[in-house]
Length: 530
Image (cartoon, rainbow, N blue to C red):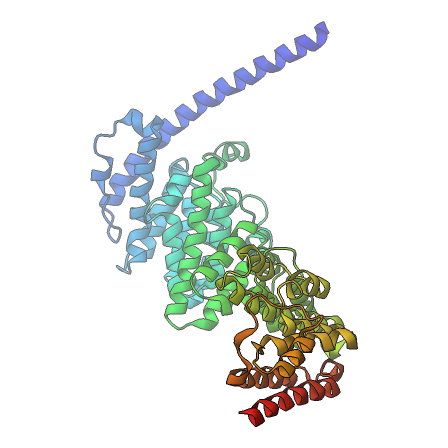
């Protein structure tokens, strides 16, 4: 135990010593480089072909702040950016020799202020100035430079190096380069370069600087890595710039180039990028463009957010079987889904049921269609106060089976036509029950009183054993004849709806002829008396 404590104590002492040496080295090194930087800026201010130094940006800064103040370091960075890239980006015709000479001097003598990333940015912008011929190389250089943009505040700032890199690449339509720069920058804040061109970049992305030791470069290359909420904001800023370029291409009518950008972006394994891109395309009315993306991640995303769009995704990519299964499952879902949507789902499933291999889909569609018919009838009853709204809500949002429809809804609420339809769909040739339902249907339209005792007896005989809907009978006199049109219309419409659908047993012709003929004779008897 004593030996272990001594080892730990020695390690702590060694660590403290190394930290002290490093702090001293950093102080001395940055002080020396600050002096060199001031000298180089003075030289650059007088150099022909290079923009003047914006000394005003450094107003109030002391030499001490140049060495130790992070805020002043950012101001110095802005001045250096202007000196090394402003003229070239704006096409002012700066001297290549003068600019290269200054950038080379800064990267050698002041690498703590003008880092390897700054040098890569300079070279990348230089390639952008060559147009299409430099597009590929510009993309590689700027995506490597992006690995140094690890400060969230710097990336989120207006006109940052990130913004200017994306703009420069966009102007020469270096689409893959834009995507790679976005992905590489986002990777500094929790993203990943897997699946992008950045994945090919191995080792450190910096350029060689003579006199800079490997261990020395390692000290500073990771300084300022972003994390936390500010890092998340920077990451979202990266994705927002990407989608803004996408919409610029769409607005310009460059649809093929826009599709190329989407293609490069969706090769990435950055999940957050996929989510951001998909959500943006949905929110901006680009659903058709979205579903053309053939991606497992998009399939999963639509499965969580929009099943109707997922169905269209399957259709576009020729996945009829998946489309059929999806819609069938959606139609059978236990969720609160409207019956209209369920009918639509089963219709779509049937449309893509290859060779009618699943007859259950057609049956489900028939049952759902019948439930929608029942819902319409129940809605009328609710308006008339003959049914509770809760019953209507249940039928509207839950898929019922035939037994529930018949025993819990249609029977108790005297929906005779719907009962007959259920027997048809169920294939139940229950002749006794079918004849009873037809008599109930006819009696619903009949008057229930007559001065002729023989006719009245016939009417009462017809009603024997028939459940009567409350308020369903015509309370008028049989002699008025008003019931004739009602009965005729009902018999004809229901008969047409049932006949010829593979269950003609639900239309008992002999029984109907017998009952209607009996009513005709009664009417004739009344006419003879009158």
